[in-house]
Amino acid sequence: MCLSVGQKGIEVLDSGMDMMEQTTETGGFFTGEYVHTLDPKRRLTIPSEWREIVGDPRQLYVMPGVGAKCLSLYRVPDFKSKLDRLREHSIADVQARRMARILGSRSAFLSWDSAGRIRIKDDLLDYAGLSRKVVLVGALDRIELWSPEEWDVVDSEGGEVSLEEAVRYVKL
Image 1 (cartoon, helix red, strand yellow):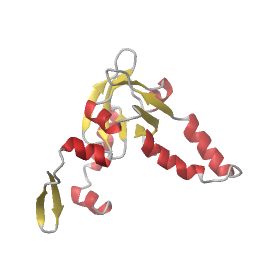
Image 2 (cartoon, helix red, strand yellow):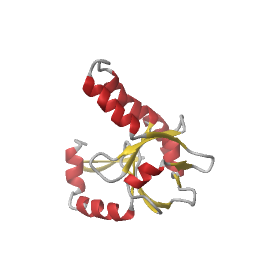
Image 3 (cartoon, helix red, strand yellow):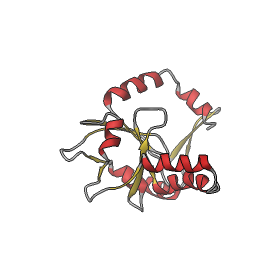
């Protein structure tokens, strides 16, 4: 079951699929918010439902947030499709080489262990100010990692945006 919100109100749709089938079929979206703690080895546990969305390969691509003091984690196939656009440029394209260098040097691929923990490089953790507590935010196509202090600021700024504005912006 899912809900459709439109001009005629809320309509309940039964797709005949349970939530797990929908997640597998659509590739899933990262939603919700969690607060976790880095363990003594500075590992972070990814929520099990998000690990199911990632699927195979059991790997995430991490990079500094764009215009924000956070980290962004992408599923490998999702990020690969973004990088494919960069690959369309000629090797002689100086700007494309510069962009590839920046993305490659400031990011990493992460795999999780049997307990669902990832170990992010210290320089990336330091960039985002992640030392103990981490707020994991589902941002639909990615996971964002925030320090609680930074998230409080961003979340309070976003609080002025209504759900109606967000839906209109993304043309749902």
